[in-house]
Amino acid sequence: MSLTEEQRAGLNVALNEAELLGFEVDAERRIAAATFRVLRLPEIGPAPDDRRVQFLFRSIGRVAASLRDGRWDDPAAPIVPFALGDLLSVVQSFGGLPVYGWEFIDVHAKELGKWGDRLSLNWISGDDGRSHSITVFQESGNRILDLCVWFDEFEIRDSERHALPIDTFIAAGKRWWDAFYAGDERTKGYGMAPLKGPAV
Image 1 (tube, rainbow, N blue to C red):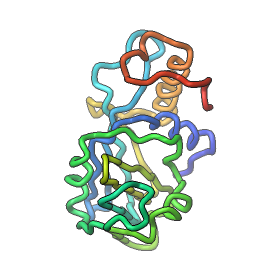
Image 2 (image 1 turned 120 degrees about the vertical axis):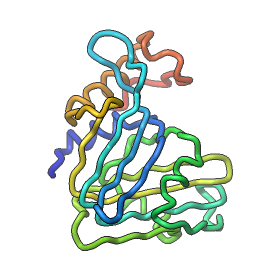
Image 3 (image 1 turned 30 degrees about the vertical axis):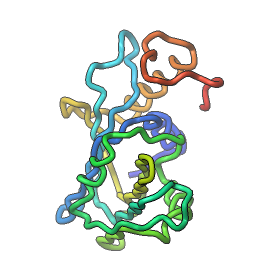
């Protein structure tokens, strides 16, 4: 599966400030599933009542994670090992916190440069499954999880398990952020206020 630079940038926008509700891996089938509650708007009308989407990643090549008891910037924070089968419960233990930073797709080299020497989990299934990656995190007080999953292809589904084309998903996310910076009432009530114009 190939992604254009425009699609990578668009996915980063559409995932910004999304709440990470779950992330799990089926090692035998080499499939991973991530559930997010995303910020998106239709062309007309309000945001959907159920904003959950699921990413299904196939041909998983590697899963690396760092769970630490400490602040994100504490190099001495104790590392907490866990098994691949515990990934979902570890992610859910943070209670669905938002991810942010505008960079999630194919930034593994940059991100692992920050925490790749403090791994709690490093599962490798083979030499393939490394075409792309997604990197996310959860941070709550003195506890942080950094997670990176490598894959060859993915699909997106809405809360009713209908397939969402990548470009449709990206457009809905960009539409929300454009509306947010424009002061659209449909983006009120999320606990955010724009400090400046659009970042993209």
